[in-house]
View 1 (cartoon, rainbow, N blue to C red):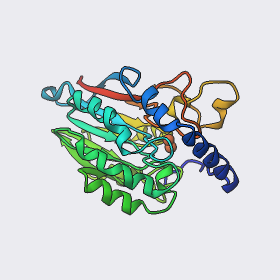
View 2: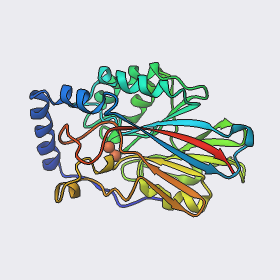
View 3: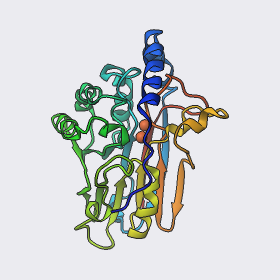
Length: 279
Ligand SMILES: [Fe+2]
Ligand SMILES: [Fe+2]
């Protein structure tokens, strides 16, 4: 089983951050976050083009919208996503990928968010994976069912045909998922097919590249969320927005939500709009 070293936090640290979050929320942090970060034009639409080998010429221009790290909870609830969902739909994507961290602390935060996704529109489907936060209560099955009831297919070490000779696959989280399994996620995909892999942790590039995956979509880092000395080291390292390893392109989104404090410094909340290009 492929895995990376888990980054688990002590209960004391969680209580500390949770207390700060609820104080910030009490001071109007949730409304501030929605107005300041989740309202266009401050909500960024980042455009990326990726040349994919094995991609049928007729599919040139196939588009995927990526949303990630929503972090339902103190700073974000379903109704705060209205402008985000409108902006995603306005891009008229062929597919939508939601790459994990639906919740911040409790499973209920993800369940409350799920109905908002029923308004998303994509011709070839809406797909999701879980992020490290989503396993907090070990109730991923409930989140998966709530997403399914609202038109979202969760890929848990699994794949689906997206278009001719093009597959979308998803892997369980490398840190907190019980069984992240790249081989299982990619099983049955013919050699030479184009593959878009959803993997919450950017470290998935290391495992995806030797398997010939064309494109990996990740989140998790929040673009560092607060790019200031010392503070930036509290969160996961952000190695870059776009990385290349052999034929594999990794796109790391800065995400939608926030944890700890309802603030972003040096990074904006974003929707990533990816256009796939035939070679
Ligand atoms: Fe996150
Ligand atoms: Fe995460």
